[in-house]
Figure 1 (cartoon, rainbow, N blue to C red):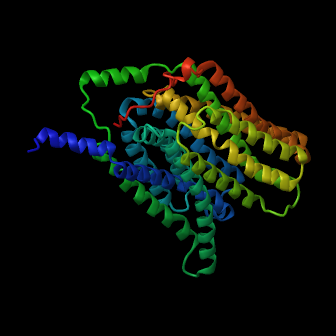
Figure 2: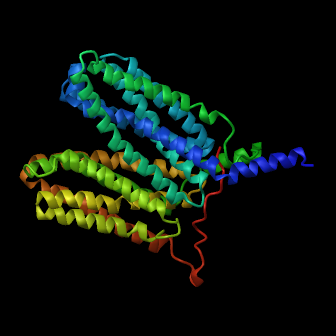
Figure 3: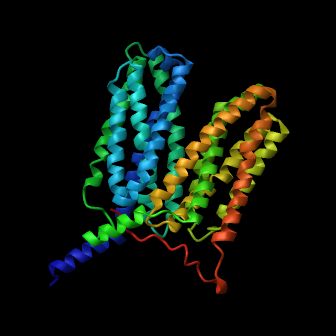
Length: 434
């Protein structure tokens, strides 16, 4: 007859090895991350939203910059907290915080201050949530980290496609109906999203679904000591490459529609091209997820950036609308593959301090983004729209440099040992979710 201790061990074994359980929690946390991005629906409401709040362009721009400021604060403290408390607890707190932000927007009425507060609170919790979700998924599937990170990023891209379409559909509904107003289509979705997110925060109050272990006072002290230690030089350099990728990507995303518009009227609207870019991201990361983690572990740090950056740079230099548009979509398909590879490699480098390492990348991203966005704006203003292609070559060409930076990182920090043995410096994370 099976003893009580054997029953506990068998149940624990099933919770760790049971793929359906892990898939369920992975799908749940990914869905939660998509819902947390619902605030991105607001820019699509641009003119209607501004009229509703009776604000101008200046206050509109400040509204969407407040989240970046609070997000930087969230990253500074969130990374260390993830290492100390574990990603599961941080996900629970952050999901509840983002849900509260949705409620502020839902019940704030036509008050500008309410939306400022909502986006500030959302930015504060969304930034650490992204890091915690990545850490959680990586530990949930320690042998398939690149796959699961790629799928999570692909789902984010899909959310970026769905929310603008949803916004346009809601605007059309308000225009066609005599009963439904803009206030309804603006606030009701926030009520629904807030309720779902706050409810989702309770999912992670139960014991961890996998990898639960008894934590003694000594074990907890060792974990806190490891979390408080600094990250290695190779992790800092890899974090810089991750940050550089993010900065170039954001710069191109924010300026591409304006750049295409400066080229004159083309056969494809800039908005459609930007949507194609999001679709290319989703397809590329789904493709990466379909590959075993052992395939292209080193190549994905080098080739995607070089190929993607070169494709877009060639399109920009041609100064042909169609070639620029095609180069942007095709280039994005390639360079988007390097980000999950970099993140999964960083996770292997810093098993116990991944949150701190990603927070380091987040801080670098925030600083470089501020400098880059302002530098592009000043350059475009001085050179004029007709010479904007000169400015846009720099973020596109930077992807090529990032690819060579990945090659340099491999040569310095990740040389293969003799005899074809696996590099012991990059072990898989243990399954340890707290």
